[in-house]
Image (cartoon, rainbow, N blue to C red; front, side, top):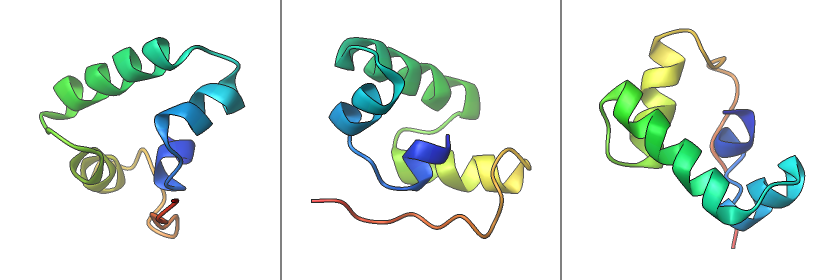
Length: 63
C-alpha cells in the first residue's frame, strides 16, 4: 500500500518487493476488489478513509 501511495509503477513495486510484475498486478486487482474500486486513486482514497494508510502519505507521479 505504501509503495502504491508513493506512486510507483507496477514494475517499480515488483522490483522493491522482489516479485514478478504479474504477482503485483494480481495483488493490485485483489485490492481493487476488496475496496470496491476500479483504479489506484480509488484504492488509495478508500485505504486512507478506512485507516489503512495515513493521510500524510501523498500520491506522487512517477514517469
